[in-house]
Length: 306
Image (cartoon, rainbow, N blue to C red; front, side, top):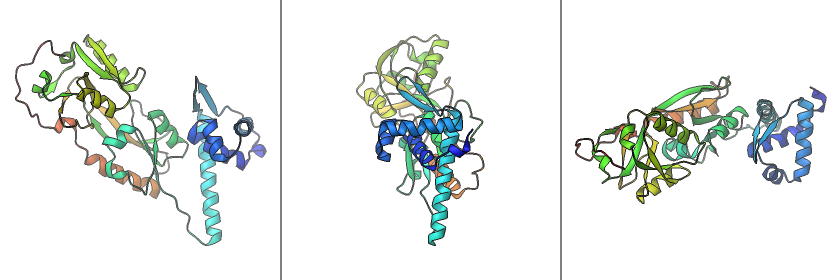
């Protein structure tokens, strides 16, 4: 590694690129040409001696080395900002940054989301990357495997539940099993997403036949299609059914664990502790599907419903 070739300008530019993972948008924010940004990143990669990003089709992702370089670049910028503020006789400050996905923001985080917090929206991979690179102080995500390079705290585990119209035959049951979904037309996320993969694997293992009603991205659109009676949907238990729809826990699907995550060594950082406190409070006030009372009178389990 040739440390003498590390450029503070290239580091700052790479931090912006790491935010976007898109050369066009990053170059626009930096007010430089896209080829110029490519040169900066390439030279920085040569100085470090490792590739800083990989390309998967049209999608870019940081390598572990790229995450470390982005984190170093942000740390350097923060130290420079603090130094200049000290020299100027002022106090350096910044807003805490929270990273999470659409579902967490809509149904889980509540009052933790306010104008004093800088919000970063992304899927699980982008949330992890935001924390690893220092872009986010705290992330909230569903984790099936706990990463070794970040600190994690279990916030809550929610059952998975079937959402259906109030007058659906299965709504008469207080809880459901996978076998009750036999023959159901399901509203599901697009293929390869973690929720879709887990659900399909469970249905296949239980030998439960089902049909595709429609693919929809995100809980709100899935619930919209259920309200239109296009099909029924399996959602996380923190997603409340809107008026006209009912949710019932599916007892033999695994619970969905939401974790807060931050970089090691930042447990005493006020930016982290303040966000964690707000996130914990918000999660504690989130209703759970299994706590919703059954509004229908239980009756014998129906057969052949869809």
